[in-house]
Length: 268
View (cartoon, rainbow, N blue to C red):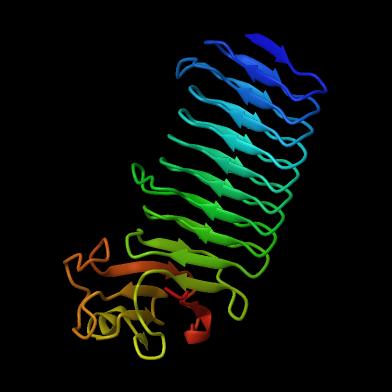
């Protein structure tokens, strides 16, 4: 294993084809783990400065340290720690663990079944398009966070603060574990509906399937359904231009008594 140290200046450090330890020290550094195989593990430490860390191949550990960093795991099962500052981190392929810690961070799992923890600050978490194992886990932590599982059946924990859970028609059937009435909100993007006329609240899942509303919430189960048929009852089996057929969007555990005030519909 090679040890590749930086200096107090702005360094550009590249690893070998084997496992490496690369430390940026002070300065705005660029650290690249190199082209090792999938069984090699690089350890990259940005330390102080606005650094850029790239794990590339292998199961890597990336730690941004202080200041505003960009961290990319790429291939392999990576662990990415953002540290202090408003950081940007992406897991890339495979199964990754991303930790935002302090700062307003943007975390993206990429493909694979990933675990994202925003930590402190107002964070934005995106699970990515992984559905090979079906589950991304997103934890907002402390702060007013935005969570979007994207594709796959994902597990969403807002944590402390006023959080927003975001859904698109092509996403999977997610679970919200800790929705706080009067504080958290559900944002529905590209569903093309008017909450004043196309949002219905019913007592059961069976009643949801007979509703002609485009978005239907079952207060009996906490499930939110999408009906692309519009005026026709039933969830439909065709795409109809939305990227997916109708059905369950998300289940809100505890089946809270949601109203239209708990939903956000962004302007097109």
